[in-house]
Amino acid sequence: SIVRMTLLQENLEVQTKYGKLTIPLQEVRRVEFGLHVPPDVNQQITQSIKRLASDVYKERDLASKDLVQVGHFAFPSLQRATRSSDQEVAYRAVSVIKQISERVSPDLLKLRDEDVITTAEFTVIGKITSQAIKANSPHFGDVSLKLSELRTMHMRQHGGKLDLVVDAAKHGS
Image (cartoon, rainbow, N blue to C red; front, side, top):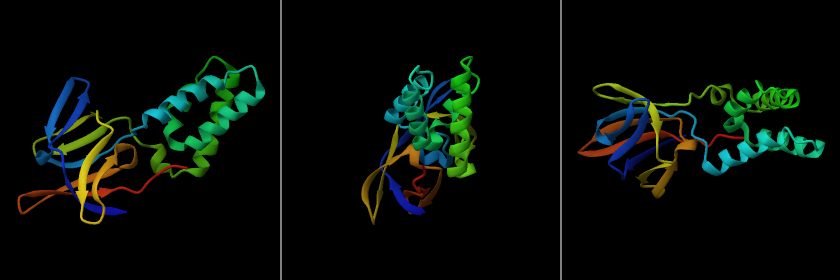
């Protein structure tokens, strides 16, 4: 869905391979969000990947089910797990990837790790360091938009105030 909002913050902090940049939001024209895994989900993924190597069958099975439930957020970690020297972990990772691929839109599985921030002057590729962007909508009031739920953001200037159009449909299993 598309929602028009006014931003309540002035800057985006972006970690690039050359260091951290602070970009004034008034300079931003478009943002293509990469994969932003919520911290609690990231911890769950890490623990579940470790449990794929458990000696107990039920633990491995529960870990597989947990990873399927997490969906596209687990995809990059599972891809790394397919290269594990432990054959059981690699086999289960491939199996979970197949199950997630059947349930999730292919677009979500292709999300890049970095965000692409386009300004009038140049494009910045890096990772936005905050977990959310503060905004205001006439319909929803003040909101905190989680980066893990955003795909694109287009900025438009109207009458001296900064508005944004957000493709903010929630994704996941």
